[in-house]
Length: 352
Image (cartoon, rainbow, N blue to C red; front, side, top):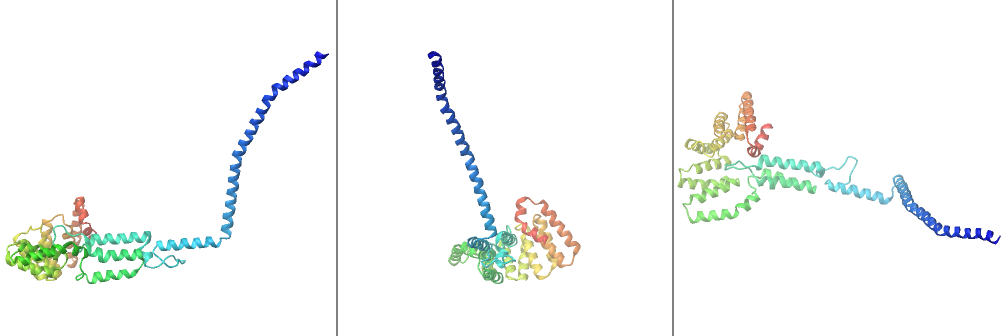
């Protein structure tokens, strides 16, 4: 009986001994799994609750905006108005004034187009011509005030444009003034030192013509021609100076002398300048003849063809004007790329 009763006790003890080491490990694994589950589920739940809280707060803010939100919205609107060039309040109809027309995305694009138009119509000089475009004069007196008015939203700057257009015969070109200031002094010193220096007089006259001061160039050219009457260049420059000064009859006389002596001088440029003087005098037939001769010599010029269109229009010659326009378009199609870029202004004028 003692053995029979002891055997089960020993078996139970052994069985308990085998179970004790495994039981804590299963409990630890279960606890670890629960902990990992909480670590995964808890942040997701927190984020969901946080999103709900934010959505509820946004809904409350939309329903009842606070004073701080209203102030931020007003500050943002004022900042946008300043960026558009309008310092005033923004009404129901949007920003008003010069700043809204010239600033902002669409306004700056319009200002850029205006600057490009001035560049192609006024600033691009003619290669080989003694009368280049007004150049930086228009850039300083026209485009710069427009840009200042656009950026600063002060239309008062536009008054400078009116002054620059009305007084362009008297106002200096700042760029050319700085560019030629030292050269003018040097050439004048050479003329004072040597009364027979034709080259210095010619170079100084060219500078005055470039600066659109023909009346200052004429005495120098007359003195140079008196010392070198056979110079084709001096006669041509004299004709150009008379043309710019408004002495159209004298300009025609000088330029006709040039074409009689050397028709191909500067690729027929004397014919073109003579045509300008003849157009100013209203001698349309003679101007058309001069332009026709010029186009034959300088076949790539759009300026001569454009002026033929003007002459035909002044003569009420509709068929001739149509032929001149077709000739201009045909010449434009055959021009190489660099010539198109150089003469784009004349092509755009022909379209208008």
